[in-house]
Structures are given as C-alpha cells and as structure tokens.
Image 1 (tube, helix red, strand yellow):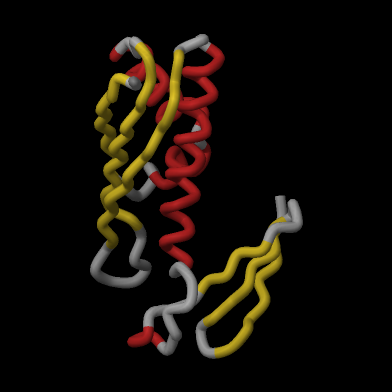
Image 2 (tube, rainbow, N blue to C red):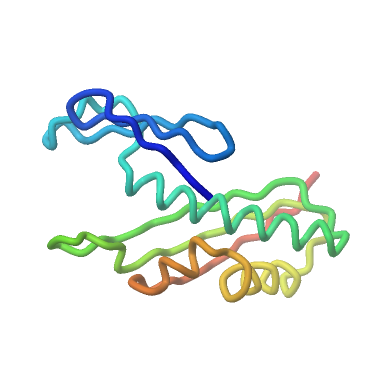
Length: 139
C-alpha cells in the first residue's frame, strides 16, 4: 500500500492513494488552515469507521441477513499533549434490516473488532475501544 501527500499551501495537503484516489486535508484556522477539508486525524477516525462498517456489512450479508442500512457513529478523545493520540474511541452501530437477530449483529461487530478491522485493531494499541449497537426493523 502506498500514498503520496502533496503540500498545497498553509497546512493544506492533497493525498493521492495507491488506488489513484484523491483526498484533501486541511488544518483548523487556529493552526493556520482554512478549514477547507477534514483534519488528518479526522481522516484516521473516518478510516476506522469505514473499515469496521465494511466488515460488519460483509459479515451480515454473507450470513444472508436482510440488512438494509448500516451507520457507524464514532466518538473519540485524544491525549492533551503531543503526540495527541486517540485515547478513547466509541463506535455506535445502527443496523437496519428485516428480522435481524441481535446475536448476529453483535457477532459481526465482535469479529470486526477482534479479527478483521485493521484500522480499529491498530488504534486499540493506544485507545480504549468500546462498541454499542441498535437494530432498527425495516419497513
């Protein structure tokens, strides 16, 4: 895997991923940014959310569960001093589907957290990770 980061100006950067996609990042105004794009640490958090959502949906669909939607809301805390690593991350999944079994959703989240999601497993080296979930019955 590779990525190239190009400085634009101030504290704005453009990342080009190995798969050829572009991602802009910028700093907060108090850090010299213009607030034009997500902060780099927001991108890290979003990556963990995307990674685990990918896993959970894949696991549930492979299990032939009738999943209609999945949302993951992440809430994180960071250390007060440098390096300001994540110290706590809470993942809350909202999974919508027809007759979804709570144990199937819980198992999918557990498998992602313990076995498959490289991003959240890596972040767990510095952060206390917690999970919660809600199931919504689809119409």
